[in-house]
Image (cartoon, rainbow, N blue to C red; front, side):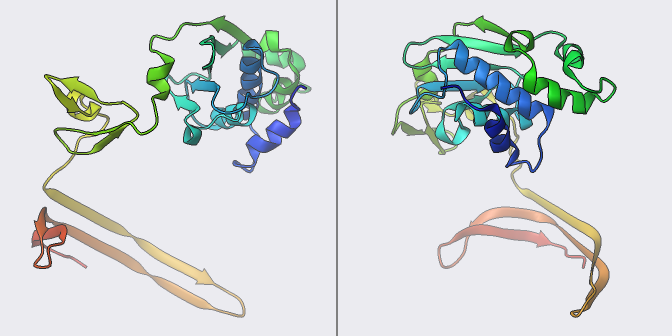
Length: 249
């Protein structure tokens, strides 16, 4: 039994309050990936694993078509900035990568009722174009094992440097010490320790007119500048206490 594309588009658009070409592309690409692995509908459980190469509206379409989700650990994001995805049958290890065919936008014009309106044309064309014209499908071999991607339940350790818990076997061992990736390799953030600086400057204006009438007009300006450190209060509670605090309100 093949899946109804219109119901999938409705499912995708519910979380956006609108339907856009990338959602349609995600739905169609998701269906193409399922078909390439021999599925007409999403398989039960966690048999299907999808790795998307971007985020945003495209992923909503993928989720609608495949029933995979980050929260279920059946959808992963490797952000290459590409509307592409790898579909993996975790039962037999088969994997395919599906990408939009080169020149897809130009090809879509042939299926658009108004070629001059690109956006509206894509909305129509992406729903009706043949799969073979829309996508390139290529078998792939993963450079990491499926087991290392999905891990096992209950796998938890603590980092020897920061002390934070690490789940799903994402730790690394360096010179015999168990470390998290940020502590061992550097992360996507840099922790700022010792200085806390917040400035809120703006105008607060709200007016409600009707049977109930309230008007608030004014300028809200708060600036907190100071050095903060971790300390323990007399009751033994860990908190942030200022060495110096110069308010300007």
